[in-house]
Amino acid sequence: MAEVRYYDIRCVRGEITLVDIDNGVVESAGTSFFDKAVIRVLGSKGWGVLTRDHVDIDSKREVERLVEAASRLAAVTEDHLDLADAPRGVLPVPPLKEDPRDVDLEEKTRLLAGIEEAARVAGVGNTRARYTEGIDAVRFLDSSGNEYSYEAVRSGFSVVAIASRNGVMQMGSERDHITTGFNLRNKQEFGRKAGEVAVSLLDAKIPKGGTKRAVLDPELAGVFTHEAVGHASEGDLVREGASVLGGKIGERIGCAGLVIVDDPSLPEFGFIPVDAEGVAVERTEIVRDGILSSYLHNRETLAAVGNGVPGHARSEHGAPPIVRMSNTFIENGDAAYDEILEECRDGILLIGSRGGQVDPGRGVFQFNAEYGYLIENGEKAGMVRDVSLSGEILSTLHNIVLVGNDRKMSPGYCGKGGQSVPVSDGAPHLLLENATIGGRGE
Image (cartoon, rainbow, N blue to C red; front, side, top):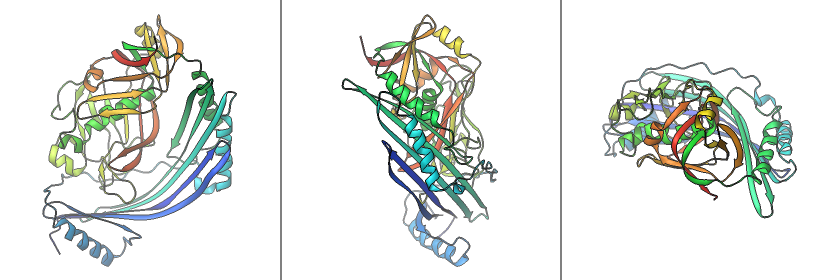
């Protein structure tokens, strides 16, 4: 056998249930099953990686055979790397309030249909709802004698409503995902809100673009935190020279009092009891009092870059682990919401997110809000739509004037390297000065 400095095997067996309803019609409803494994061997230089289905992790002979096959792949790599030492440990998984496996597919479909139907308020012409449920039974072992197993259950839905009038179309959307069981009961208000927002946006104005004070709601501020700061702090991007935060540990990159955290141990949608390399997870403060204090790492990037802790390796079923966020957020400050509006005086309140773009290497971003409101004399005024926020990551962090005390987390999925994993992000309301707001109004 070729040289083996280290190996690990991660097996995930489980099921995925999906239900799609489009304009009252059930487009699909069913459950699929999977059983995937990733075998990694660190040879004299770099990794050899195999992916297989239906691996018997309890068979010593099968494990030896797979390690030998992966070691042959490792022997031909030219990339030399090392692994940092890492703490071990597994957190308990939060108990389920209701196991979704105890609810039949017919009832799941009926409950989702109720949410979708609630979105069809007057003025809404199209609706769509989607339910997603994942059951993952994870087992892991490595050449250091580290072993663990756990089961993760995630359940959630999204609903979209589209309203139209005189050729103008507007959309409202809501979503909710949890790690503590079944998540479809008594959720019709999410559908109603999506429909009401879509209809309200038909009468909303398009604001004039320019530089002004802006208040970000917890969802949009959370998206900024995740996309602009979280990704830029990931150790693999730092190692590759693709992060504006590279080489800035110990430097002030934001306003005084600003604390930005990634915490896999937090019982939110991005919770993991242990990372995909068998490393214990813990709260990591990326920014402390406006100063960059840590990067996010797996064992490989910690050895290469330093300045941080491991425990941030994650992987999709049947894929090798890479550095990923989990629950990423701005910690609460001490400003009340009314105080933030009053301090803003005249500006704009941005609510929700419809995606955008970020370049962590160049340090620039552009995000589209779902909608917003003008702020006049410290009070919320008329509703606006088709509005965006753009700027430079570092200057925006310095331009935070007030940090609210009402942090809220929003669940979702993050894509990177062809893999998608559950995450949550959040923040309290933030007040920015000199914000670059995009709009087409006069």
